[in-house]
Image 1 (cartoon, helix red, strand yellow):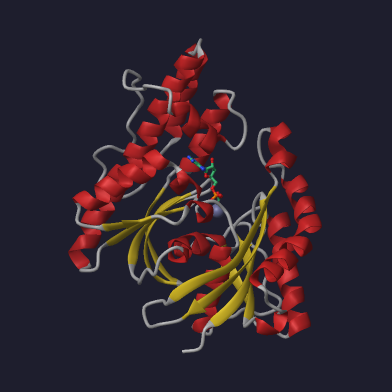
Image 2 (tube, rainbow, N blue to C red):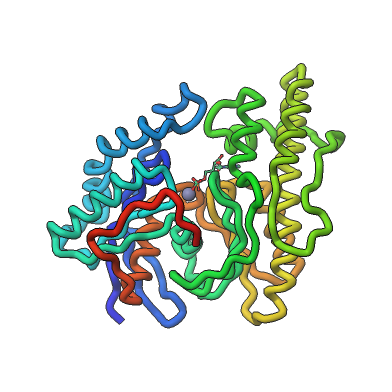
Length: 343
Ligand code: KG4
Ligand code: ZN
C-alpha cells in the first residue's frame, strides 16, 4: 500500500500546532513517521490570568497559524504537491480556536485540491502512542488530559468504545485547580509534579473516590475539595510540597485502581493485551510509573507516547487524519467546529 502524507493542524486550546506525518498503512494500523512537528505554546499570553482566556487564545491562533503551518511544511522539506490530505482538529475544545485551525485546513484543502479530514481531538490523543512505536490495534487506553479522563477500547480510528469516564472533573483539571490553590500558577500539572519531588505526603489523608464501585468511572471533586482545605493550613514551602506529593499519589492511585478494573474485564476477551496511557497527564512520571507497574502485574504490555506527544500537538492530529484517509473517511468542506464532541 502507498504511504499517505498528511498536514495536521491543532488549535483547540492554547497551543497553535502543525505537523506533517507519513503513514505507511497496514492491516493493523501501520507505521507512522513524523516528518515535522511545530508547537507554539501560548502559555506566556495566558499566565497573567491564571488560565486560558478563550478570546486571547483565538486571536493568537489567527496570528500564528499560517507561520506555524509553513514552518511544519519547511521542516518536512515538502511542497503541498507532496501531501495526500490535510487534517484539522474540529473539536472538542474552545470553539473560537477550533474554527481557526479548521478554517485554515479548509483553505489549504480548497486551494491545493486536497482531501479534508476533520479530526476529533480525543481521537488524536488516542492514536498518539503510535507516533513513537509501531503499535497494532486493538488496545486498552487511559486518556487523561486537562479536559478529559476516560478509559476506551481502541480498535482503530472511528472505532472506539468507552469503558469508563469521570463523573466530575478531569484528572488534569484536578492538578491545575489544586496547583492554583497552592499558588503554583498555570499550567499547574507540571509545576505540581516538580514541587512533589521534595515532598512527603504519606501522613496526609486524602479521600479515595468511588472505592468498591464495580465500574471504571472516575471522580476527582472530593479530592479537590479536601486538598483545598489542607492547602489553607499550609504554612511552609515544605507543607506545600508534602500536599503536592499526597495529591499526585492520590491521583496516580485512582487512575491505577480504575484502570486495573478495566484490565481485568478486557483480559477476559482479548489475547493481545496492551495498555496505553495518553494525554497531558501521561507526561507525569509518577503516574507513568504507577500505571506501568499495574499493567505489568496484570500481564499487559505498557506504552505511553514520547513526552512531546503527551500534551497537545498536531502530529497526533495528522496521524489520526492519515488513518482516516486510509479508510476513506474524509470530510465535507462545510464541516463545522464543535465545542463538544464525545468520542
Ligand atoms: O492533553 P493536554 O495538553 O490538553 C488537553 O487536551 O486538555 O493536557 C493538558 C493537561 C493540563 O491539565 C496539565 O496540567 C496536565 O495535562 N499536565 C500534567 C503534566 N503535564 C501536563 N499533569 C500532571 N503532571 C504533568 N507533568
Ligand atoms: Zn489535548
